[in-house]
Length: 261
Ligand SMILES: Cc1cc2nc3c(=O)[nH]c(=O)nc-3n(C[C@H](O)[C@H](O)[C@H](O)COP(=O)(O)OP(=O)(O)OC[C@H]3O[C@@H](n4cnc5c(N)ncnc54)[C@H](O)[C@@H]3O)c2cc1C
View 1 (cartoon, rainbow, N blue to C red):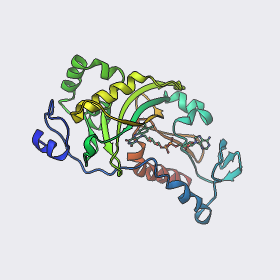
View 2: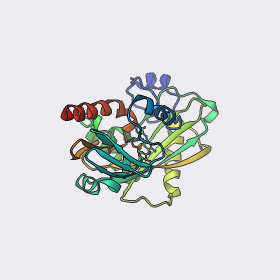
View 3: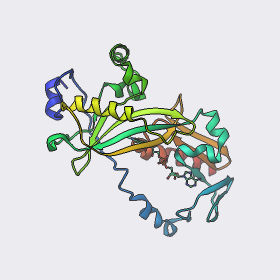
View 4: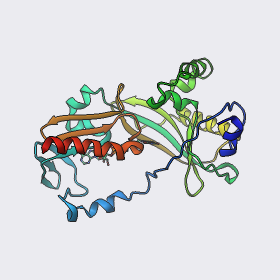
């Protein structure tokens, strides 16, 4: 899109806008929490893994939980960033660490509507989907020259509007085996400054602050390991698990069930 087309799509500040890409997208709300009641119906559909149980050990054909043992020919362990709890060697071999992110929920300035999810140039550096773009080195060079502070905190400036009109803005990234519980206010300030500049306003009104954690590995988007017969350990290791889950899950299951057959 040209700069004018982009601004017609998204009411942001004109300053610095060169152009854009548009892509139809669907937003998934992590607050919806619809999975739990759906999973509660599972005893009718197949084998029951008790809700509210902690998995304490996995052996071929057996999952030991804090609410009793469950037997299954095929087992998928998808414990997010906690792979190291049950399979520390798998986590170590993949270089798995925890990535802590800062995000904020803010009021939409002037009640404005922003239909698309907005990503900025920083996202081009972050997502491997853009890795082959010939212009990527030029974007990186410019950011290294002009905004090393944003690269230092691995900022991925983006925002999404919730159905109630509030904006979710983010985010910065820090890596650790165990992220500290302390949130550095300067990271939130930086996100707020950059998001305000993107929207062309002086300040944003914060409603909520959020530090999230996901699994990260340095060289891959997904970790799929087979440490035991009939067992797969699966983690999304680049913060794209909401987007890719419905493609990843059937791929893992097809492979696991084909091996079991
Ligand atoms: C702030 C933030 C923003 C994000 N934004 C996006 C985005 O815009 N797009 C996108 O695609 N992705 C995004 N992600 C990433 C996405 O949320 C993750 O990739 C995804 O949630 C991974 O799903 P999962 O089911 O593998 O792991 P999780 O969602 O981490 O779920 C793992 C579950 O396993 C449970 N568990 C762990 N150990 C045990 C045990 N021993 N016994 C029983 N249960 C256990 C945990 O309690 C947890 O409920 C974001 C993540 C964060 C934190």
